[in-house]
Image (cartoon, rainbow, N blue to C red; front, side, top):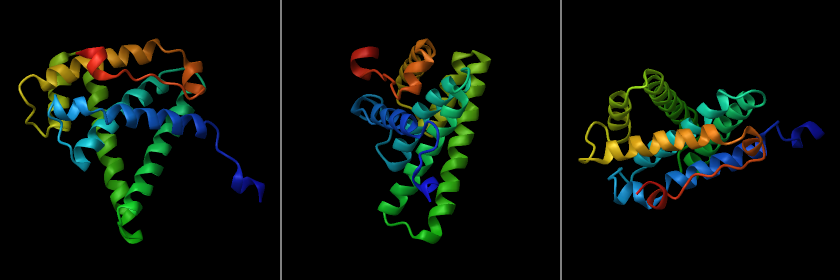
Length: 179
């Protein structure tokens, strides 16, 4: 019976990290200055991008990094499930919609990962343009976001693993940090 009330390893830290990624993705700068669509899809894309950067950092770390990365992923999709239900999506549709979001996140993550492996700024620009703006980014928005993403990736790489394990991550206020 007590097993029902026990938290999984890293669950608390993962939810805190995920919450900070969501908070970072919801900064108005993305939507007002960079023209990211302020829609469910646009917000999902930015949350997914921030969570990808976090998971990518944790997967590359020593133990318990990969387990914490999985816990962040689990927190994201638990939250997606909850939000679908809050929006009134019927129980019969939640699993299908969650699967669609998982597949979208997975595809975008693979594309971002490939762009970083290639080490090619043009590849990252193309990937961001396709995923965030559906191929129609405003003039310099993709370039600006690519620079921000690269800097954020570096900051996350420099953050000691113990901070993530403690549930601490510092996503900068974009206007102040990157403008």
